[in-house]
Length: 418
Image (cartoon, rainbow, N blue to C red; front, side):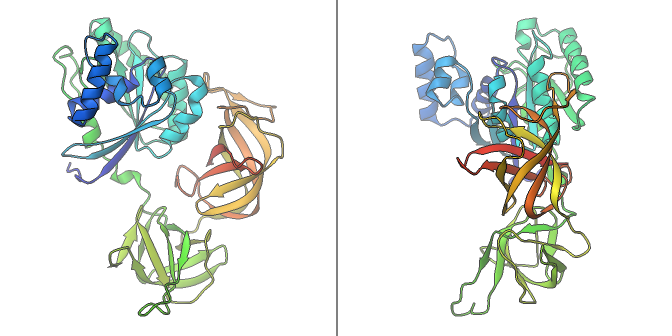
């Protein structure tokens, strides 16, 4: 299958503390020759000063002073690298339970998630937590890297047992495209190159798996959704009557001549032109940023949504959301918040808490009405004005929200519409 050399793959890494996430990313960068010479020299010197026999690969990603001192990842570290076959953006997320919210942030835009499991420990509580979050965010592809195989003698039986353990976990997940790879991030086994120490493994190395992962079909090209970010009125020579609605296409395809409707007003028209920064287009599709003009002069403003007349999102003031609480301050029953949805902001409240989820067992906990930091559950949200929404599983852009505390302007929660 041909891969577009310009195609961008975003992936996140997750795992418990000391499972080797930062070392794995460092190995990917180092072996794919994506490290600048000055950065490489700096890490080599630091590793030497610390008495390491080899380069400490984790230093390529642990950018905060506190991370290097403690040898852990605290914040989400983003790294970019490229190979002849594909471009990549990596989100290295923390393993500690108290940083679960950081994993949600890092994984929210990912095409794939790499979940690391220590071969000596097998599937543990954090494995289930990270897998549930990846499933909740409906990341299409999971790559389960069973790391530190060198510490268990590259034993195939250990690998098979962990795969069997994880399959029991994955049976409860939404994500079904799961790949298993036995690796040693420290020594490079099955990371960029196939390992001579595990000839029993017949699959591909991690980098080849990432390079050939088919992600084109992950985009929703059926439901045409165009949230309007701003109205463009140049009012200069050649553009006196130009009125364009600019934004980023959330899903679907738009073509000149398409019949469309502007929500929430309900006015209909046809697409007159589609303009990018460089040229006029016959069609535009997700995730392009364009300006659309209509044949009729109708009232459309920021926060409105242009969609096809025969394929509309639900317009509702009340809907259920799987909510991930991110604030140190717990939620308050029926407290007022601002909900941000695409380009739209409305006053809202958490009308009711339906249940919370025990991340360890996936059981539902009922009869609780508040959320603490890192807790996840299903709630009913009510807004002052209707929003144009889709289920998150159908459209992650029009199916996601964030809640903001009006008093502090802090983002307190992220949610997936169900």
